[in-house]
Every structure is written in C-alpha cells, then in structure tokens.
Length: 168
Image 1 (cartoon, rainbow, N blue to C red):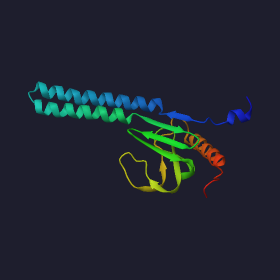
Image 2: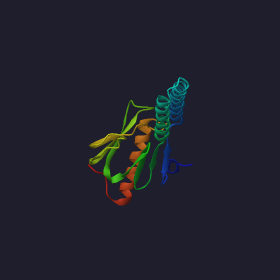
Image 3: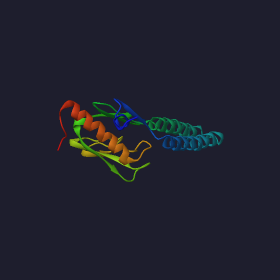
Image 4: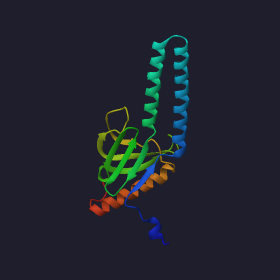
C-alpha cells in the first residue's frame, strides 16, 4: 500500500462513542435504577404506596434519561458532519467552520474545538445561545489531536472540491 492510499479519506466516516464510556454510563444507570427501585419497594412494604409510586416514576425517568443519553456519534462526510449527543443531533457544513483544534481535558483523550466562520447556535443539550466556537464532548476513543486532524482533512477536501478555498 502506498502513501496516497494510506492517506486517502473515505467518503463517509462514522465514529461511535467510546465503548468504555458507554459501559460506565450503563453501570451508572443500573446502580441508580437498583437504588431507586429498592427504595420504592421498601416504601411500598412500609405501607407508603404514594411515596413508592413517586419513586417508581423517578426510576422510570432515570432509566429513560440515561438510555437516551447513552447515544453519542460523529459522522463525517463530503458536505459536513453530524454530531449526535443523546436525543439531539446537529448538522454542520464544512464551509461553516474555520478550523478544528485539539484541547486537553474533558472526557477521554481531550476535546475537539470547532471554530465557526460566524457565530451560530451552540450544540448544548440543555444550553442555548450563540457562539463562534464549540467543543465536542468526547474524542471518540482517539486522541483529540488526531480527530481534529481528520476533521481538518475532511474540511480541506470538501473546500477544495467545491473551489471555495478556506475561510480566513
């Protein structure tokens, strides 16, 4: 295999969440569910059915919230990228971004910071607002610098294909 073949980007690259992060979330969900469920059973046995039902409702909410939160995915293609975190997904075109940079810290092996060409709504699951940069929550089981480099390469290829050049 030559260097051109090794460096060739695929048309689509899908990066699922790091399995170890998913496992930690699943264990947290199971432990929380057991604790809340146990409290509900104890309350029901103690003759407190109203409180027991409240804790069972809390249990259902806990499980649903964490089950939704377990999904995290990044999909890169020729037009841009999709980022999914929990129940929300965002689409961003390569032309809307200036650059992708690695930042130490966060979960896993650092974060990738997206520098936008113009301020835009943030990716935040609960937050809202406008920002000119945003960080992905994980680096998808690779070093943040490597993921940032891959995203920059996808962007460079897309901008070269469209003849748009890079945004200053």
